[in-house]
Image 1 (tube, rainbow, N blue to C red):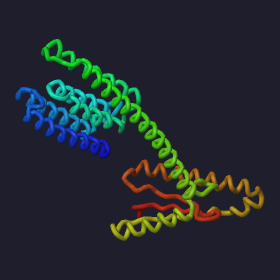
Image 2 (cartoon, rainbow, N blue to C red):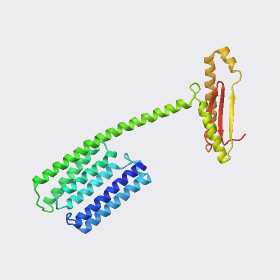
Image 3 (tube, rainbow, N blue to C red):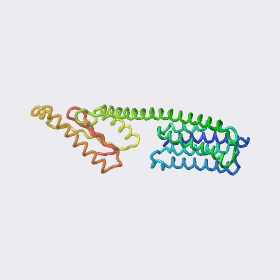
Image 4 (cartoon, rainbow, N blue to C red):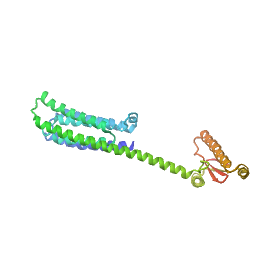
Length: 293
């Protein structure tokens, strides 16, 4: 959620910057837009961003396939820039650079298909704006100039598509590598903390946990208990049945002890989890937090 909100705030900063530029262009006559339409557009920008912020901050966006709502934000951004371009009666080329800024925002989340769909949407929107100039507003246009603008816009958007797709692939590869690395770290940590024979915690881990619990007990004046298990007659088991059978006895005892300690945790879920490990040879130790004698 923190990452998604940071991205949203980046988009919000871009909105603020381009809104100021649009207001300057409107005040200077570069954008021919009635005051009511300008106010309506500003209100729409504020309302839509407030809605995105609410969805992200409240966690309601988690129910969507894209919890960051990147595609929706990019689509809405393309709509607002089309409104500004449609109201511009001077050089619209000045406004087209905003297309690139909006599309690059999609690098955080979108894949190639999403980029292609948004590119098609942006181009169709621009064609609709130019057609509205000819059919509805009867504005004289230079078809050659508009054609070149369309080609430039299409080239820039397609470049954003392929660049964004490349970055998305790199991001996906990096995410898979990070997940694999995290799993390797967990496996290495588990191996380092566990006894290879019984799968219980090893002596190093138990002693570390014991020291931490002692410090915690002194801070909070809370009791804790230690149980040391020493399996009787274990040497005779090795002597009469072999070390393989002795290893099986140790493993089985570890399974039973850990199962019983987990049952205590279920009964008393408020307690800190018990730690059970092999102290050495046929000796085991159990650390019981918040447990008196």
